[in-house]
Each structure stands twice: as structure tokens, then as C-alpha cells.
Amino acid sequence: MPIETMIRKLRQHSELPNEDIEALRSVVASVKSLPGDSPIVREGELSTHCCVILSGFAYRSKVSENGKRQILSFHIAGDMPDLHGLPLKRMDHDLTTLSEARLGFIDHNALERILATRPALARALWRESLVDAALFRQWIVNLGTRSASGRMAYLIAELRQRLGAMGMVANEQFDFPITQSKLADALGLSVVHVNRILQRFRTEGILDLKRRVVTLGDLEKIVQLGGFDSLED
Image 1: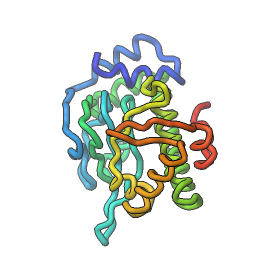
Image 2 (image 1 turned 90 degrees about the vertical axis):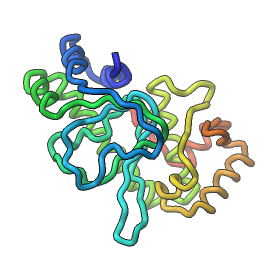
Image 3 (image 1 turned 180 degrees about the vertical axis):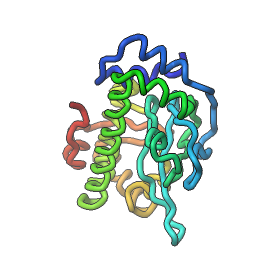
Image 4 (image 1 turned 90 degrees about the horizontal axis):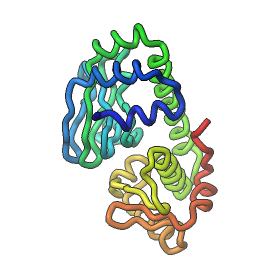
């Protein structure tokens, strides 16, 4: 079934009866494959569906009045990055694929109908929204209080944990399709500064980024530099 990644993620922290899982599967209206840098939902659009990332990566972003882009978050398989569109309807930011991605789309009306009669599923999705909000708070702290190297280290540590929870880290290696330009937009740095940090991390044996794959040489150092606290309960 197409949304197994999402189901696995929900069941890591929430007890869901099989009937709820089948109900969730039943409301997937369509599945689409999109290339990288494809818009999923644009800022200002009325949202009628939630998307589930089945494979690949996506990111949220906003563009300021001076034309500068701020990347707000990165999303991986199992995430529902626009679940907040269910009550809010109109998007206040862009949601875009970061890499080639496969997405499942769930109609808002159909989702609201099953949530009205399935409290365990409603609680599980509510929890996902609260965790998402907690990640936003961590990003604010990261951008506002840490050095450039600390910001980079925090981002690497966060993604490593989230990907690891979904079984997508092996031998401290994981996919990392984030360009230096996008890292700069996420961390409030210049591309030149991002490049220097990555070169220093490589020289010091902390990590290597090659062919869109991160290899961690010193996870403890990354966690220490980024002041990373586990996102798990």
C-alpha cells in the first residue's frame, strides 16, 4: 500500500487499531511522482488535500519582500508537511520537492470525515502537528543562538535522527540531496560560508558529503557542536 512509510511513522508513537489504518489507506485519492524543485502547494493557494511523502524529500520556504528565500524545514518519507492546511486552508508558505519524490494526496473532506469518528487516529495526527511545531522552535533557537558551524551540525544531527527512525541510515550514511545553496537559505549563511564549513568538517573527519550522501565520521562531535537534544520521547 502506498502510505506504509507514514503508517510506520505514526505507529512508532501511537497505538492505532487496524481499522484506523485501513480507513487512512482508503482516503488516499492519488499518488504522483514529481521531479526535484517541483511546487506541491504555493503560498496563497487554497489547500484541498494533504500530501504524504512516500519517498524523497521536500522543503517549506517563504520569500521576503526583498526577494530572499528562507527555507523553513526539510521533510522526509513518512512526513505530512502540509497537515496544518486541514484547518487553516490557505497556505502561508511554499511547499516544494527537494529531490525526485513520490507523494500521496489525501482529500481534506475525506480526512475530516474519518477523523470525526476515529479519536486514536485524530490524536496521532495531532501529535505529528505538535512535533512539527517543536521542530520549528528548535530551528528558531538554532538560527538565533548558534555559530555557523553549530547551525550546520544541528541540521545534520536532526536529519540523521529523523532518517534513522525511518530506517534510512546505514553505517552512518544517509541520502542528503540538499545543495549548498539550499543549505545557505536554511541556515542564514552565504554559499561560500557553507562550503567552508563543509570543507572543515571533512578535513577534521567529522563528516563527508559526496554525491548527495552524508557519511558521518564523528557523530558525537556533530551532536556536541549542534547542541542537539534527541527529538524522541
